[in-house]
Figure: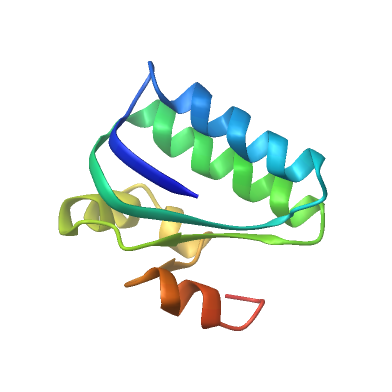
Length: 100
């Protein structure tokens, strides 16, 4: 999945719905391309945490790819990088081992 622009209280619900749709169709291995994300608030971060938990519960994973330096720092600061694998590129995320 690719996200563009702001991931905030107005847009995060659409991402959550897209992830739920994928999970409901049995797709529990999700990579989110963050390369074009300009802003992310706590609702967006919460969407990542919730979706990660659901992916893992369904036997899969959530991986984040290509965050900007700001977003990578934000993910680190709030502690999500300890739970959700973050990769420099989408290709790296797709090629990494299932555990991370």
